[in-house]
Image 1 (cartoon, helix red, strand yellow):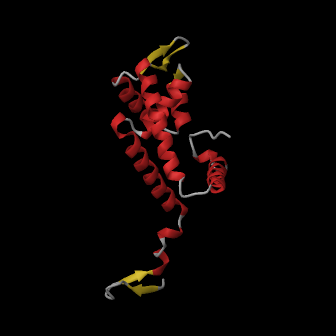
Image 2 (cartoon, rainbow, N blue to C red):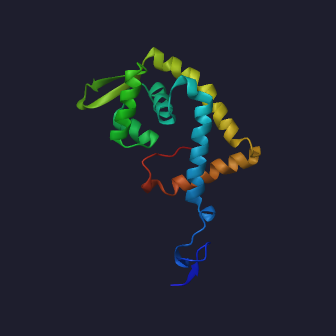
Image 3 (cartoon, rainbow, N blue to C red):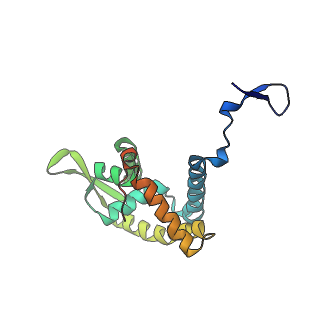
Length: 166
């Protein structure tokens, strides 16, 4: 074990654990997620919807009657977590759940008219947050950034509960 002294010069530091966070893609990914969420909230705050509520509502509105398990997989959350998200959307009268006729254990989710109106209000603001996030990049860099993210997700699908799409 190779050691050096800390900045104050009075405690040994094990160099084998000295890793620069700024060289780690996971560190940058977490920070980028923080940035994307902050931009989302700046644009959408007055509509009182979280990013995962938005993505859930988006899927429910475009796939009415989706079951809770499929929704969870599509947005990349576990069934228990997505249940709480649906509870909050349902409490705001944005979605309704009903028992599936073919399987009494399954719940089918459909949007309400208020849910559709909320989604229509969120979309332009969400898109603006995405535009702001990518603004520092050229058009070609944006395409490359998206392409590289897809490569990473698709090559690690066994570790993710979210299917990737072209």
